[in-house]
Image (tube, rainbow, N blue to C red; front, side, top):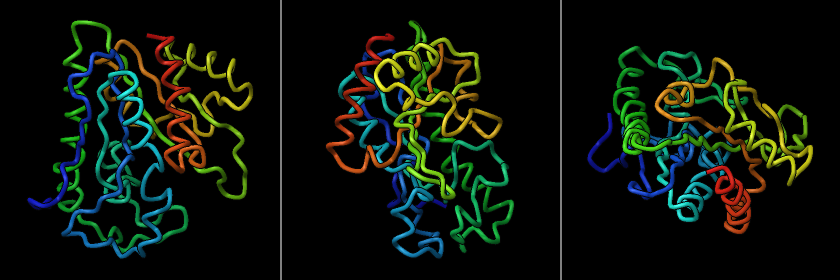
Length: 243
């Protein structure tokens, strides 16, 4: 499916960084393989949250530099394949996303989905595994970075940052305490989403790590480089306190 002029699914920044943190961005990119055209979407759709996690590529790059950490980001849009969904999940290549029809996903065959898994999902997840295994001689911590819309279905989301966890992560609870000391109730505990059976990347790789942390940052706080700088300074400082 991918041609020689398509980007690699996994973009790795600072591969040999000294930090124990391995940063990942499941929805950081919004590329579409040339063979899939534009998926039948108008250009403005690719600017929206349905296509990617706005600001996460910039946040991850800044954290990688600040912490000397490895950052593995997915280059392709979540509309092509959502790598934070288990293979075969009904929403891994949605035909409709938050009310937007995705014509290019309307009639996917099993072979179509298998090609996307083989050429996008598998290399991305392999790069995360390699990043963690390269640090196996010392504790390595998986940090999954996501962003969320300021409002969803008419509900204004007040949280600035949320910590998603399955009640089995001391690192997550420590980070939540630090965020609440900084932000008060604007730090969300399993808000605006709860970690559940839909998550894939963290449950898949957590056994390779000493612990995990999944963060959701509100997208308006990451809308420009200044906002990304500010959030990288806050999150980076708190991660350094946890290391």
